[in-house]
Length: 523
Image (cartoon, rainbow, N blue to C red; front, side, top):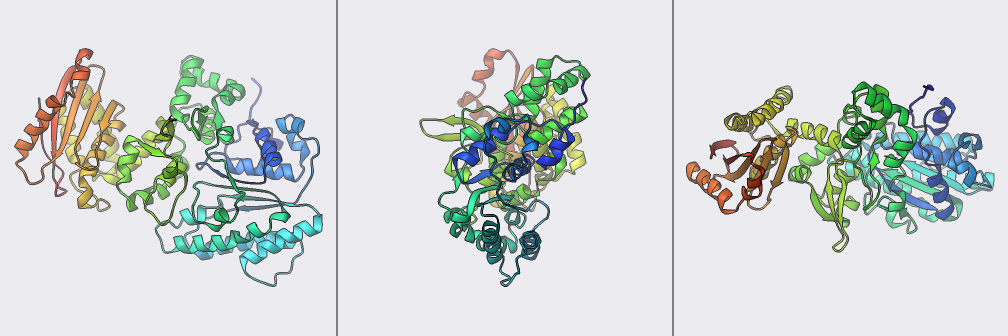
């Protein structure tokens, strides 16, 4: 087989092309964007190829024609008009305070000031940016292409700290000149994880086109199903050979693990490119996304808004406005969670224009639920890994008492990040979370208001119907009897009667005072 080089971690288009790496051709998108419009915004999760896309754009506007040999853009572009490029990237630092951010911007601007021989007379960052853009235009006679990568990182790095608002205000001031310099700008492309509302860069730039949820550009980053089949046949065959499976089975496993991202409705699914390439390089179906960095931003978000745990465990139906933009003035973290890649579009109701959000794939679900469980239960992380394995075995062996004992151990102490008045949601969510991690099929109807949940877990030969209730100061035996009666009255078991599987009806009674699982009864 011909030697193939996979561009793992390579974010520079020129470096990738000169190394002869496998490149999934996205250049037709670059051509269309440059030809059809002027100012764009794109939101995509981390490790999704945003930086490589911007590097491709940079090479295009700099006229590096030789790098596009054999690619779609070589045939599409006839003029190759070169223009100056200003690239601003926040990917190289952790912006926990405003001085770090200002220092990074100073470094970037200084590079261009030196290149265009600009003498700095006004130290304000926004004025310096304006001078660079106008000088580049005046010295070259060409409008400027401006590329901004991870524009929101200084805000997300400082979430819930005193610097979040300071960083946001500084960025608003820095970006504000762009709306006044339209005649100097040929092309403007901004990427980030989330779109932050109420920032001048968006409210001022009326022509800025947000293509994040546009179906035409749903595969502009990542690897689509058709691209997988077109570019990676040797790697798929190698996986199939190593694991003794058919090529079709290997594809199905890849889909389960790394596919499932949808950035619009009724579009082809997209694979996470970093995870897919790592899988091919290692020739193993591993969990790679979370190995590349702990999702500290999301953990901080959940600590600030613990009720979101319920949303992540069960998915959610929402309208577009609920997850399109992050508003710092509210506590709605759904946009951050969705745009970070932990949830994605899984369904769409065209009549009501409602979207269903859920985990994109098994890798994200399993890895993230483990992180959540370690954060939300009292059992040490290493022990919890063992407990989940034991829970799976207990379900398979129909050992209900063992199952309930493990739930009791996991919720014995209410974590400090969970308030007493929301412990009902906590118990429901963690119980469901543990069952999800066990790998068994789980059907759940968690409710926010009453704190009562119907959780059904199925194995190949058994059905476990759990009714969760809070004691609320009542006799726990009576509460358990009421829960078991409710299972029968509501007909929870009826839908499973034809399966022929053994049926277990279980009442779990939790403490309203945060003292964990008080009692369970089985029938």
